[in-house]
Image: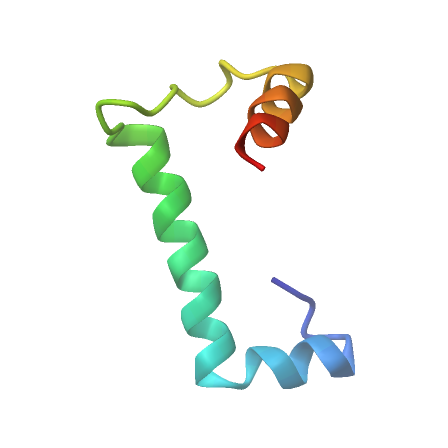
Length: 59
């Protein structure tokens, strides 16, 4: 998110749009952790190689 002691971070954190983005990211992370969809993998089940393979297959 940022540090209030850093002037650039503080400026970003002062904007409602940036705070909305941060809040949405936290919400998505918490939902993935506790409210898995039917096709979601539980947190911590992907290794980096699994994730890389998955992302490369998508695109």
